[in-house]
Length: 300
Ligand SMILES: Nc1ncnc2c1ncn2[C@@H]1O[C@H](COP(=O)(O)OP(=O)(O)OP(=O)(O)O)[C@@H](O)[C@H]1O
Image 1 (tube, protein in one colour):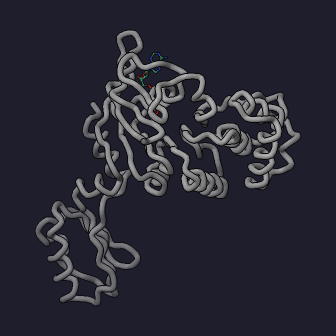
Image 2 (tube, helix red, strand yellow):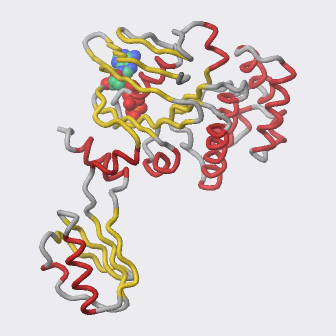
Image 3 (cartoon, helix red, strand yellow):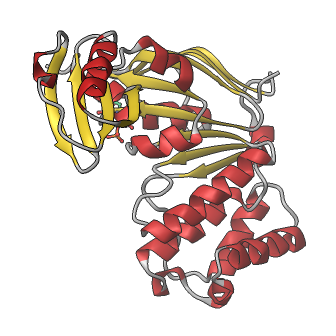
């Protein structure tokens, strides 16, 4: 049984439908990507998963059961807007928040020390949140989300405001949580993070699901329209190959846009007649390209 199951959930605000019948399941040890343009319905969906607001239709199940206070200790939330108390000491608030979610003071304290060590900032234990930089507050917010060892973690733009080194650090901890069996519902506008972390995704657009499934299968549904050609010298006539829509010279050869995949064979043949080919690849689309195509097509 999957720890988190969202079934045909609808949420209406006055005459605005914020979420229109979304369904998804997050299994144990999975990071599930929830994507969409601004206003698509991601935060509304996540708030329903957290029990902060209730669906008008459909249901959400946690290990097969509907929401109740029992679920509090099961759930962790990293919100997009930061919500820590600036004037309270890091240790006091993290331990307090963990206790609210059912953890003993001693366990909360032990976990907090572990996380501060993991993030290489043990000295923050006694600091007030307002004394920390924005990026370091983000680490504390992350700890607040996971310190009570939730089995289901909801992360809204988990890596925003972090420098590249800290992005890597938090990314590796998200992977560790996954490997330890957590179910993570992960929302971001950074498609390269989704490519790296998520197995399954849902793309929402204007409250509706427009694309859903495993990243691998989704990529197969989209045509491969980019050929990478590595050559040691020039190849002439590429732009005249049937199906070629654009040719860009790169440092190591060419990047060629094609309107159908089979054009790749003719490109390779032509290149081999004129040069030594040391790389040939028909690239699958990036998630960024898929997102823009899927959501962009529907934009007014
Ligand atoms: N409390 C509310 N009252 C009225 N409308 C709301 C409320 N919360 C959200 N909405 C509307 O519901 C829709 C979905 O909003 P939501 O915040 O879920 O989008 P999102 O995908 O998280 O967007 P973003 O990427 O900008 O954070 C939007 O049109 C928004 O204006």
